[in-house]
Length: 463
Image (cartoon, one colour):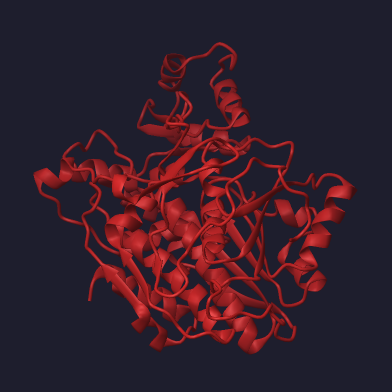
């Protein structure tokens, strides 16, 4: 049995889904696909397969026949690169200040893609955000110890991580807390009868009629919402008009409605409450406790909409001293030991190396889609309101458990051609060239029937 097949089986069984449905999944290919000493292809393939198969199993529970789900690992891994272009130009992914820096005793990684995080990090270094360049940050960080800068940044609500080895991460209280948690949790949080879902026929995609509120921005949450949209759900992306977005929104908004709601206002809260009243799934990826403070935590949702499935994303999980800490894929990779281990695998022990894609984000996003569909399946059988929890760090711990990949010199330097998996479509951002979805559903192919549109394009009203 392949690594990906074993991983899919474990993901599936831990959710209590029917074991016989696994026979409908066909997984092709093996690592290495991209140059990495980690099983990133298997992580991509198994989580996408889990999401697609769970959507199909929910469709089966709604009265339609099961269908085959096939995935080629090369396509799945390519999809998890998140590559896209607009009008022929691939946007710059990273702010110049983002990246890994040498410190007095090690390295730290700064995430500066949002202007307020960039400005905050530069001010912490004693620099003027309006004039400072990367060389200034490099010089300033030479006087800092890595762990001191990491803690000082966290104290100010900024995002930076010290570089650790696996052994160093494992010795931290947070590393031990993450290791003690499962990959994901699906928990019943209230009583409710099974929801009456819209009628479904065999020609409808399996999530047709399912309404999903997507309150996420970077990157795992939007990927999860995009997957649910591909399988037929009506996904409404809810953005604040006061917060920035990253360029990837042009890709991750495919298939979604996109509205603006300001939850700091009574009118905005009323708009969201109206949407919740008819929603089946509520997905959020803001800082821990942020949405709950505004009245939309899991328990409040279960009271307002009995039977709802809430899906919650965090960086470091719900346990341990970092449970409230902000984080992004690149930072979690650095903190948990992946960058150090990858550098060593490539023969450069003193030169840390990132994974070849944001696989913690991508795999976590597909686990969010899987968890939503699996919890809805259980809701149909058992009733109740449900809470799904995932985190980037728990996904990282799982990725590490998949084992290491041996590569020869040619594979170390190889990077596969993603061109066969690209498709060009119109969007509200320009001509979008991006990856086709990699899960092949035998009867109702996955598709994004709505073009990606800028935030605020649609009214906060279900179709």
